[in-house]
Image 1 (tube, rainbow, N blue to C red):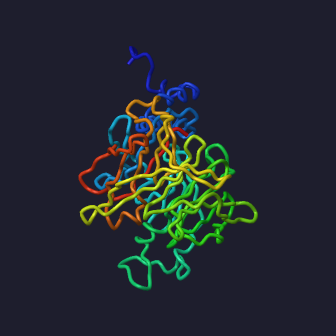
Image 2 (cartoon, rainbow, N blue to C red):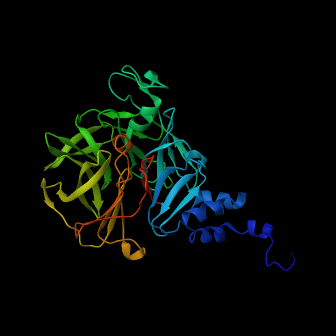
Image 3 (cartoon, one colour):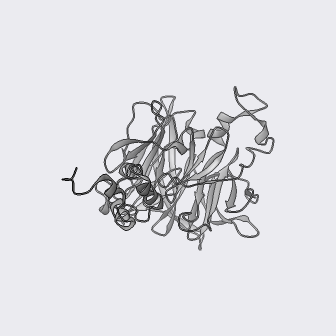
Amino acid sequence: MDDLPMSIAGWSELHDDVLEHLTSFLSLPDFHRFGAVCRNWHSVARQKRHPPRQLPWLVLGEDDATHKSKFFSLEENKTYLIEIPELQGQRLCGSSYGWLFTLDIELNFRLLNPLTRKQYDLPPLPPYNSHNNITTYVKGPQSENYFTFEAMQLSLVAKAILDHDPSRSSDFKVLIMYGERNRLAFWKLGDPTWTLISDAYIRFNDIIFYKEDFYAVGCCSRYNEIYLVNTGLSPYAKRVGPLVKEYDTFTYLVDYLGELLIVQRYRKVYKGQLYKTEKIIIFKIDLEHERYSEYKPTEGYSVFMGANSCMTVDPSKYPGCKKNALYLTDLPQQVFERHGSKDLLIYDMVEGSFSRYYSTAHYLPASPIWLDPNY
C-alpha cells in the first residue's frame, strides 16, 4: 500500500474545489457513482455547482427486474440503470431545469432533483373534476362512482412546469395542467394550496414559460387558442395572439431561440393499437400583431420536447445530435395508455422527414420524458 500515490482515505479528503472540478467531466451515471464513493464526495455531488454539458437524457421509467430508473443517453446510444429510490413507483408528470415532477400511487405530488436528491413536497392536488375530491378515490377495480388511485396516478396531472430553477432561487412557481379537462393551477413556495385559474374553460394541450410569462394552448371550435397565464395577486388567463386552425392534432408550444412556435402533430391509430405520427406542421406566432405563418427553421438548432419543458440545443456541440430537428417523446400517459407508446421520433424541420432515436420491440410501460442534466 505504501507504493500507492494516495490512499483511499486521501482521495476522500480531497478539497471540495478539486472534487467539484472533477464532476464537470462526468456523465450522468458516473456522476451518481461519484456521489456513492464516500460522505464527502456525496456532499459535493449534492451541491452540483459545475455540471457537465450534455444532451438531454430520456427517462424511461422503472426497470421491472431491479426497480432502478432507466435512462437513455442519446450521445452514447446506451441505456443505464441508476438507483434513485425517490423515483420508485412514481409517475413522471413533467421536467424543468433538471427537476422532475413525481406522483405516487397515493397521489403525493413532489418536485425532485434526481442528481442532488433534493425534493419539495407539493400541496394535495385539485379534484379531478367538479364531482369528486381526493376522498372519493379508492384502490381496486374502477366503478361508475369512484376513481381508483391507479387511474388518478395516470390522469390527474397532464403536465407540470417551472418558471425558474429552484436550485438557484426559492422564488419559483409551478404551473400544472390537471384533471378531466386539463385545467390550469399554479403554486409558489409557501402557499398551502394550489391557486386555480378559472378564466379559461377550454381543454389545454400544452403549457410553457416564455419570456418571463406562462402561456397555454388549447383547442376551441377547431382553432388553437393561446392564453397568457397571469400568476400575480389577481390571477387570470387571457386569450392572446391569433387563432390557429387545428386539424385533429396534438399541439405543443415551443420557445425556439426566442420565437414562439406552435407545433401540430398529426397522428392516427396504427394497426388498431399504436399511435403513429404522420405529419408535423410548425407555425411561428406573432403575439403582438396576432398573426402566424408556417415556419421552417434553418438556424441549425434542435428542440427536445414532450412532457418536459422544451429544450433548445446547438447540435454542433454534441456529436450525434441532428440539426434542425425536433426530438419528440410520446403523448402523456393518460392518452397513450389506450394505444401503447412507441412513437419516439426525430422530425427534420427542413426536409420534413422522420427517423427514430430510440427503438423498442414492445410499447413502453411508462411515459418517457426528457431530463436536462445541465442545471
